[in-house]
Amino acid sequence: MDDLVRSAEAQNWPAKELSVDAAAETAPDQAAVGAESDARSYLAARPLQLDLLAQSLARAFERTFFYGRLFRKHFRGKQVTPELARELFFGLPFTSKEDVVRNYPNGFLAGAPHTPVAYFESSGTSGNTIHSTRSASFFTKGDLERDVARRFSPDLAITSSDVVVNALPFALTSSGLGFMQATIAAGAMAVTVDSGSMLSSHVKHIELLKELKATVLVTSLPLVYSTLLQLEGRDPKTEFASLRAVQLCGLATLHNGKAKIRSTFGVPVFDTYGLSEFGATTFTCRAGEMHIHEDDFFFEVINPRDGEPVGNGVGGEIVITTLTREASPKIRYRTGDFGMLHYGRCECGRRAPRLDVKGRLRDAAQFGERFRLPIDFEEILYRFPAVTGLFRLRYEPIEGEGNRLKVTITADVDDPNRPGLKAEIEAAMRAEISPNIDVELVRVGGAQAALLDQSKFANVRTVKSAMLDDKRPQEWLVTY
Image (cartoon, rainbow, N blue to C red; front, side, top):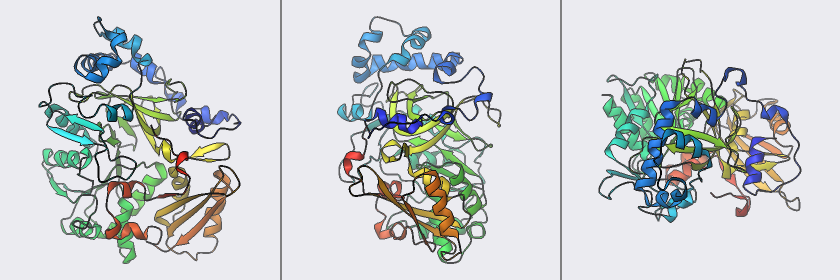
């Protein structure tokens, strides 16, 4: 069965009779896994991680109000040993974002209120910029130091000769600050331009990237910069001749998306799965795989129906447990993101699990017997070299046909009048996703004109939702 269907059924999305697709159950790197085939077998083979897990469980139970109540029946009167942690961990209840919100502000704080040195909260999914999301996350000095050490990949190797332009948000989120501190800690020059605003437009970012001879660009939407340059007939590879890497954070990007960025800028792409609740949790190796920082986090991917870890390379909801967090430990925290874990030795030689992230479960839509995320459209679209980068999805219910959706994809291409291009892209989309898909080809900058207008570019939510115009009734959307 398609893994996103399994997740959707568990979240009470529209259900129907579903066929079984055996190929979807087969892990892509199954032969290389060995003894580590899921989260349980991984943990059983890693005594260091098991010991760290036991310490984290004890810290959360003994020092936080929330877990002191939640785990009372599991740990009261017991010493939390690695053996006990291994026995009980996968039966412990999950933590949700709602739990964090309901226990705002100090329910997850492990220690006295004066202990933390930093407060962050997630940007939320409602686009609310007026009130706090109440998803509090505290960091001690030690927490911040560990996050700084995790921000850049060791294979990227930031040095004092680098100039790092940091175009991530800073308000209440840990991402911009974390990469800035990591840049300074490496002795490199930190150029903190934020994520785009009236005071720091993308046009200004481009000027700084060129004039300061930036070597690393940290951003969630690099193709915004290339589009602005292409609108003026300029080539990013020429304009940013000193650039040696693009560091992504904050938006799901898979293989074809990263390949598009590599070909556009002519440099390697490094990705980090970062959340305000945790900081940086992964790094990208020289082989292009995103590895878990396994000494600080334990990852599961679960079937939301029964909470059981799924197998190697099988998709489900990403769940994170902190192993070294001092101020705000999280145990089995459901992120609401869809992804896959891959076990076994990587081409780079590391054995830390590898993660693919496909996006938010709430953005999934049903097409026939399967559910799809915006990134599924992106991966097809970016197969075509003529697509320059930015695009827009529009979902509209088909009147009188239940949950069926009409999809319109507007995509930037180098030549909208190129013979056969529109038909070729439509054929691929219709064959692989749904027959109810139309493709509109526009010149560079046409698909996201509002995004490129800085007066419209107000907040993080604008960035995260720019690619999807979802006209479905709100009851379709899953909250967690």
